[in-house]
Image (cartoon, rainbow, N blue to C red; front, side, top):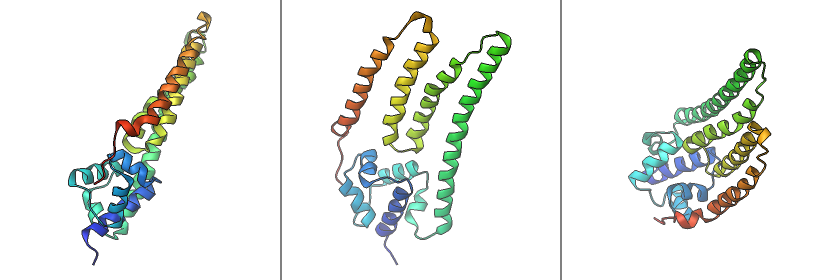
Length: 197
């Protein structure tokens, strides 16, 4: 019979691979080094209880899931939850685009002004939703891409909304915002140092 460290290690490895995360990405999320995550997965050490709880919450599983071996029903249920999360994300984003379509049609029928900009505004609105959902369920690497699309789509939406004012200098504001985002991604390791436990 396997000891608890080996069982937890195997389950942590299964969850990480299901999410297609590297040990380094998991380590950065929880403030540890990749060596510490490797030790957990090999069954050499266990994370402290608080970290174990945070990991279970991140993956959307119970502590019971992490401490029991080989129960394929529970592991299959985890895979179903993952596909449910993807479906929820798609459904919520489609609701934003449905709302943009309703606004477009309603404005065209009532005000005889086909408000096509509603579709442009749907892009940054979708990014806000994706940022929130990615923060809860997704991978940290996607945050950079979501924020990038948000910055440029918001600028484009403002520009197109007020086209008659010729606000092209707004695009110049996007350049320092994008550079700041790149720098933030580049220095995040020094801001959030890893713990080697």
